[in-house]
Every structure is written in structure tokens, then in C-alpha cells.
Image 1 (cartoon, protein in one colour):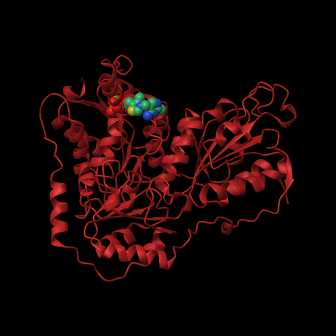
Image 2: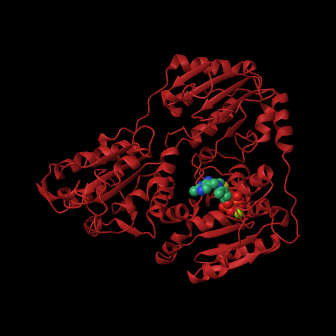
Image 3: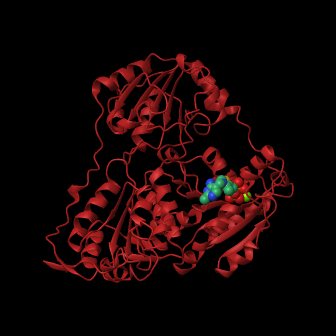
Length: 537
Ligand SMILES: Cc1ncc(C[n+]2csc(CCOP(=O)(O)OP(=O)(O)O)c2C)c(N)n1
Ligand SMILES: [Mg+2]
């Protein structure tokens, strides 16, 4: 059947179940936006391409589906580099489609040419470094296969972003296509672990006295939370999680140790620990620096064989999905010693609880604790980087099924606002977005999208008068803060200009009542929290 390239692309995306497409406009992508008009896919028009891609990322993490972005070539395409890199590091499936100069102009100094010939930027190469695949369609006939291959690459195995560039004269050309929807071409089945390797890991676990289960972002299995929690119960094993794996567990469980990999409780436990089981874990290379690895048996299960033993030599390993491994754990409950449970409780209780104060200024912990207390259990938490991220990944406990969205491996400022908007588009659950005053100003371009699409989000700005985390480091290292502190705009007025409710809190009591009001308000709210003065050193 003869069909225009752009209509073929639109119908493939529709058949893939794409519900929303994020992006910006421009000459070379305009045709594509026209073709999705009658497909039922909702276009989301962003303020920047990097906002669009972060938004698609937040959408993908929330809906557990591929996020799609359309951009024009030239600056539209190169603006994708940071968010696609962020998605690459956190294994988020995204598909970015960009137009480019017409094919007959390529190599002849065309405006926004993306070929790399002459003095032009090779867009595909620029994005190749941050994607699983980056492709340039050489002919209209090649588009169908490249698109299907791109979707396959984005969603299969360890997911990630894919970039496809199409010269803009191809859009309206007709090609012969026998395309039929075929969901089978994507391989989302993860490999199974071997029974022999797994039995060794499980047997060793049974004979250990102080075992620890560490769960990381390399656990790629869908709907695995219940199986993980059941296994924890059966094994009676203390567990801790990486920031991204917070989405997989119930952190209110009494076998939860500390508040994430890096917490003091975990490192204290490692003093006695004789066995660590790593499930999909990507540890920092210095993680065991202060521990005696000779006295710990390290066992690793990962569906990616290249991750086995990457950061540390391991004693036991199994390659395959977490689900296939958990299925091999015997159904009988394994009683843990009273000493182990008592030790765990002691370590967890030694975590200092925040003092709820009524001094001028709000303590950051008071903010997250108030949200934990008042927000529904299904609330999607999105956070930016800096102190805010460090605190949320440690101190915000997730309920089973609750989502926390964070740029983990790239630690990217400016992520949270667009990602929160993507989450609000993907889900009916409440979205609460925590930002530092620096991170907020890196992402605020996209606030117009909240207004344009009538969304409800609660934004919380934690104002410490600058890039606090870097400022403290700056001070400790060079005895000054001159590149890290700044004056802030009137955030309340800014929020009002977008039609949001806005307020400013200088005490925890004020923050509490403002957050309650924000929960009750139908639209978006922004709370500008002034942090305690000792955070403003
Ligand atoms: C895009 C980007 N640029 C710079 C950095 C380096 N960086 C990490 S945290 C931070 C400061 C963040 O300031 P703010 O959002 O106010 O949070 P705070 O540290 O004050 O809590 C900076 C500059 C980064 N992570 N990402
Ligand atoms: Mg700050």
C-alpha cells in the first residue's frame, strides 16, 4: 500500500499505544505534528526541547511506557542531549524523532544541516553518545524499518533512549509499505537465571548470620514489587535500596535497613555483615572502601552479564531476571535469629529524628515529613538534585507501588519540573515536586505547560539562597561562596502569573497549613519554603 512517510510513522506510533507526544515545533518537524492530528495521540507542546524530553522521561517512568519526543533539527535536536543522557543513565525508554535539512541540500551548507559535512553539526553523532541507538534515515523507504528497530532498541533488554533523524523532504514522499502491527518484534522477556547458580546463592544465604539484600535499578522486571516483598518476608533478610529501586519496595517494612545504600545504618551493618546479595545493583566504586571485603560473601544477580563483577569481584553470581531468581527461593519461611532483628532495630533507631522546630525558617526534614504525613500514599514524588535529592532519597519512605522520580545517575538540575509535568499527564495521582531554588530556576521554562493543560501539581521550592550543596563544598574547599549564592526572584508572583495558588512559609506550622490548602486546591500550587537560617551559611 502506498502511504506518506509521515502518516506511516504516525500509524506505527499509534499502534505502539503511544498516548502523548512531547516536543517543540520548527520547519523540519511540522509535517509530523500534522500527521498525528487524527490519530488520537495527544500532542504536548513544550517550551523547550530539553523540557520536552525530561517530560517524556517523567511520563515514561510513571506510565511504564515509552516516551516519545518530536523536535526540529539543528538546535532542536542538540537540545536533547542532556535529557537523553539522563534517560540513558537511568535506563528509561524514549524515542526522539527529529527532522533535518532536505536531503538534496545535505553537504551544501544548508541552514541547520545536521550531517557533519562542511561546517555543520553532526546531530546523530552528538546524540549517539547519549542514546542506545542514533540513526539517520538514508531514504524514505528506510524509515519504517529504522523506526521499528528504534522502538525495539528503546524497549528491549535494558531500556534507553533512541534517536531517529529524518530529512524533511521525506515526510511527504510516498512509500510502499506492507506494515502490519506486530507486538512480537520487541523482546521484553528477560533471560532466566540458571538453577545451579541460584541454588548456590540461596544456600550460602541460609548459612549466613548477618545477611543483607541490596536492591538496585538494574531490576528490570515489570510488576515485581510483590514478589520482592514476599521473598524478603520468607528469607527474613534486612534490605536496602538504591534511589531508583525505592519504586520497588515497601519502605515501611520492619526489615528495611537505614535509608538507602549510602546511609550510616547500612555502613554500620556492614561491620558485622557476612553476606551481601546484590540484585540489579550498580554500586559506586568506593562503596566498600571502609569495609573488609574478605569477611563478606558477595553474591550478584543481574540480567545484564556485563554488570557481574563490574565494580567489585563477586564470589557467587547468576545472570538472569530477578523474577526468575526469586521463583527459586524455597516457599518455606526462614527464621532469622533474635540477635539479628535486635541489631537491625538498634541501627535503625540510631537514625536521628528531626527536631520539629518553630524557629523562623523551615528545616528541610520538616518539609518532607509533612508531605509524608499529609499526602496520599499514591502520591508521585518528583525531586530535583542538590540537598533536596539527597534528603528525599534517604528520608522519604515509599509505600508499595508509590513512585519517586529522580535523575539518579546523571543528577541533573532542572529535571524535576518537566518530569513532574510528565507524571501529571501520565497519571491521575497527585504529583508533588520538590526543588531547590537553583533547580527550580533551571526547569521553570515548562511551567507554561502546567497552565496550558490545566494540570494539578504541588511545587515546593526549598530556598536556601543559592546552590547550597555546591556552596557548602565551595566554602569547605576554597573558603568562599562567590559562584554559588544568589538572590532569588519573587517566586510567589511568578507562580501567580501562571495562575497558580502560591504562598510562602517561614515556619513549619505555616508550611503545614499551606500544604493542606494545596492538597484541597483543584489546581496547581507553589509553596516557597524559606529554609532555616543555618542552611543559609
Ligand atoms: C545541569 C546541572 N548543572 C550543574 C550541576 C551541579 N550541581 C549539583 S547540585 C547543584 C546546586 C543545586 O542548587 P539547588 O537546586 O538550589 O539545591 P541545593 O543544593 O541548594 O539544595 C549544582 C549546581 C548539576 N548537577 N546539574
Ligand atoms: Mg538552593
